[in-house]
Length: 497
Image 1: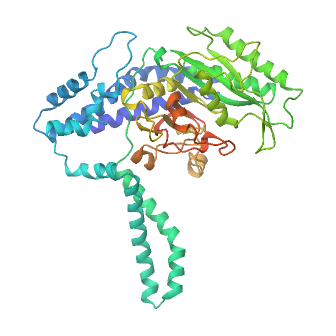
Image 2: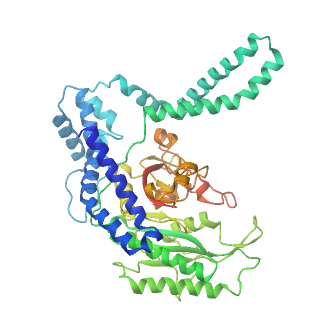
Image 3: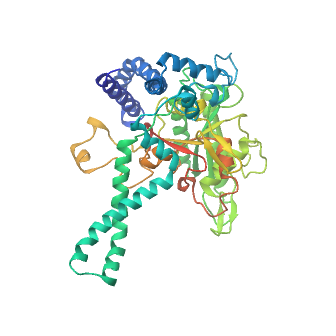
């Protein structure tokens, strides 16, 4: 495919995602004419965008086989046949309905673009081109090499800057003081230059994903959860309405939607308003279940509410460990624990569907555009992305335990924005939670900071954090790094914050 055609298709896909974003805004939803116009444009583009995404799904494998063919004595079809044969030896190939997906070694892409590439290269006598040596060197030296390059560049800048005063006769403690004052600016400048060069040399890598055209299957059952506080009846009604919108954006497949709620912090365990607030939330969720069809083996909408416990660190009654505690206790509840602080609601003990594999976490003000949930699950479910946890190190050593999509603020976009907005505003400012995107660190090492909105594998997430976070040490999972769970940033905009 030529670059010009590729650029045009990329532009159409970006417009398609922009329209999906617009359909989720209150401005468009309140204007029937505008909504019909946007929906029609989206419908017209959808077949082309789907075909383009199918092409992109295999494009990495195609590019991998092309590179291997150029550096070996084998043709591209022969390279492909060998990769398929290697996958077949590990159980790859066609599968019957209901049969589990194969492990990563049974996927041909494992030998073309993933962990089995080096061994496969040796088997075909591949000679890597000079252009690929830098990427291979980075993979070998890891973060130590990255820090060494930054340090070297910083020292060079600092030496050049100090050469001028030294030639002017400044020496001794004065030169040492200048060196001390110039260290941080030199490091900042070196980091910016190295990151810019790394972005040009390496760039972001698109993760393979499953299409899941028929929706999320049972084997990849996923919960979409919104941690929140029960504050007022009006706020509860708004959260219930938002939960319904999330469902309408992703109505197909085995997806469940839940509010993870706490009462507000208090100076005693119970307040007079607690019962009424909980009853309002129970009523709202019950109404959603009456309005929409149930899932195969349970209700589609859930309310999971926790009681207050005494926090010695905060000196008040509150939900245990706040948002981090919600997600941790949810994971334990999903795996059969009976000693969480979740309480009975509506006369029923806290229950969750069995065999939930993934959890998508949203903030209370986050919008989930059309297809976003399905696409995220498709990425996590692909054999090459599945996390492999190593008990000896307590880390995910292959695949990803967390995927974090791009998050953009819900401001007018494109031509909808005013001239003032385009000139004086930016999409994110300095707030890391407003626009989480793939960055150099994530592109180079597959690790980064988790901003609290994304999808995670329940078992990998819990295994990676087991015993690592003491109580009253972490206010929110938003402040956690992702190396233990091997997180990845996803640049495509899947939702707005």
